[in-house]
Length: 120
Image 1 (cartoon, rainbow, N blue to C red):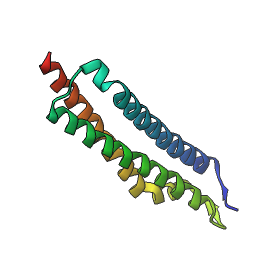
Image 2: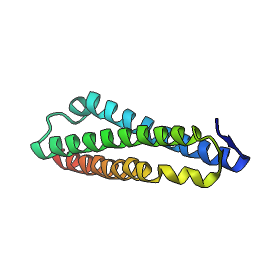
Image 3: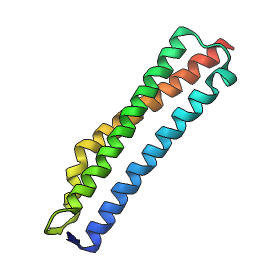
């Protein structure tokens, strides 16, 4: 099993916590918008529905990216050597796969909000 210094422990903890928080936000936003979109905003236009569907798909990609981040961090800990803070960089690609779809989906939710305000 890998050993690590305090800096590496902090780096792994921060990366793991950050990934979990984005996964939690993504899951919560999808749940709330799926549950309440029709009730809060009434009948949705075709454009609004497409914006929501694309946002939901991007959130799912973000959640899968988060799972990939956590898997990459865990596999790094399985090394039979001392793990250092820069080993967290091995989860850089999965982190991009998590964060960019999250940002795009959040922007689309904002667009959805603006579109739905225009209906009133």
